[in-house]
Length: 544
Image (cartoon, rainbow, N blue to C red; front, side):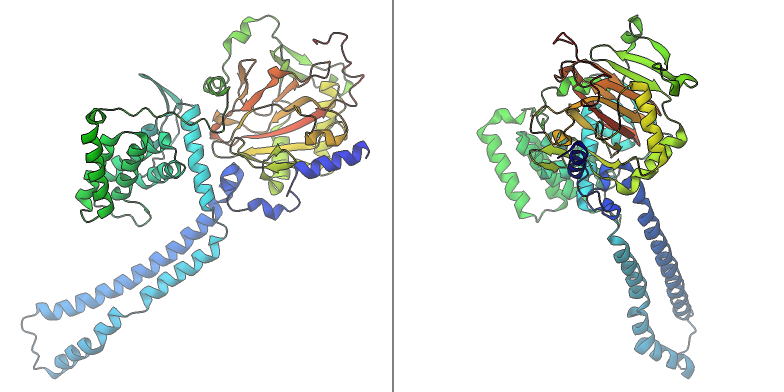
């Protein structure tokens, strides 16, 4: 199989399920790309229209009922109303025999609600699935962890990092969007159902607090109640080892629902446990945060994300500089690119204003219909995973002349051959709610990697273009090199994945930090070893 055939085979694996743009709207994947979340606004607007028509119908029905009520009431308020009047006597009998029956059994109310339900059923197939609720809830927990966000603050719509007594505002929205008690309950329940009581407890506590404050109020849209929140929180505390809190919450539950035998039995159980072990009365449960999936570098990774890419020490090193780059290419002679050397080992460079706003928007538009949930290689399979939340699409250079222009620009700037089969097609990625990609290498670390199906060697270099800006988060963190780079709209980040010897550079372990606020788009161009022999020659030193 030749190089070109190898490229086709690789992209068939990498772009699994990408043949049909209609499949991009698969239910259960809405949360994994912000562009899919934005599309969910359209069916909600349709639902708003349905509800508006229903309300107008109900308002007209209630006006008519009010008219009937006022008419009959006026007859009863007139003490001089003579039933001896045959006309009044007739209407009284008629009202009691038929008018009241027609009012009570009127089909207007059922017709209004039926129209609303029929409209909802037509829209239902376009709505997010429960898996999206779970994914969005896990995203909030991820943001809570990585950026050390306060749950009470999040519930109020405030993005604050809390470390001990220090409180830092990470993002100040123009308009506060607070969460309801039911919202907080649903986040806590997702964690609860996973057996993750570390996250379940603070969210359920906030739900209990908000439900207490609005107890007695009825909200049509709520699924949960104060009793539900107390029940789940009590058991979460019990599972975490805090029997005293579990007992207190269960007793409060019985104040609202005294006939619940299950909770009554739990109260007896907790009382017995505390009587047998009095020390548990004051025991404070210490719940460990789950490290799932297991990540040895998690502390370093999250620390670099929390800096939001701020690395002031870089500007004190003379060998890190800025310049206008032409790479001796006639293509760039009249329009050099602004180059900023970010790091030396590994060599990482940021090219500012590499593309224009118009070009970035066009690339996003070309990719959007083909976006599919991003996957990672797992043996011979490509699987979606929790540690990579995004959607991606592969664009051939035949899709639009802009992609050919982009390849020429990348080739001129890097001096590398970026034509297939020596480079992969452009991969466009849109991150989801709290979208991230935990620490990974771009180059293959196993000889059985699908990357070798291209028959053009390993990925020697990465050229990543930021197609959008974000309000907060989303930095690119290099773990072992201990620095991070913020999202810079229209800029491109370049680094070598391999040493000149062909060995992988371990210092290029990197991650896409969770997007705190914003819609992050990037485009990746991965360049392979073969075809670069005279463009990036091997070194005589195996250390290079």
